[in-house]
Length: 203
Image (cartoon, rainbow, N blue to C red; front, side, top):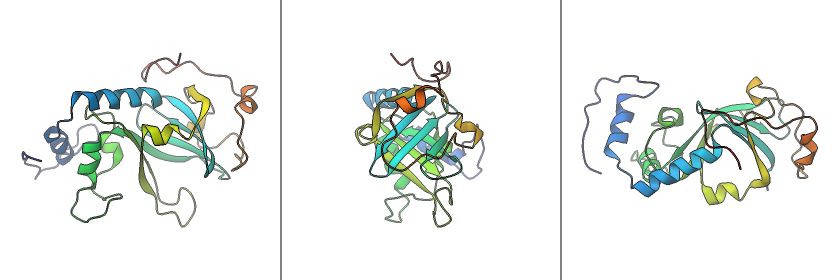
């Protein structure tokens, strides 16, 4: 990586520090990486997505302001975190703090980098400590689109906040297993129109 910036005086601009802006200025991803970021962002932004894998049923609304609302099985409250789409190069920069820790590096918050023209195709979610239980330390977790969509239920992507997860309370206790069929939601939760500020209409 080449280039330098003077970040001695941090300045907040829409939640960004001057140091963060410097990093994004130095990184110059290829055009196809930018296209991948935009495509993945459009698929998720302003949508409610049903996931099911070995961890059980999970439903998440990813809002256009970078907030993620996770309806996790057997929990009484919605877990409120953040989400963003990043390039591989950007994620390497986030993790390159010299600690040899390939997980969360403690330097930047995913909300600081939300919705910026950086390129790539990994979606990351960050949840606060205690969200999944009193011993949960919180964390920053990323998936490429193949790994992510392997867990998405067929037909399980819906426009808007279909289940009102922004209110903080799930509509009912979501079981871990078995798979919660989509048909079981249809009578009580009609589909919503797409959010105009996010993504593209689902065809």
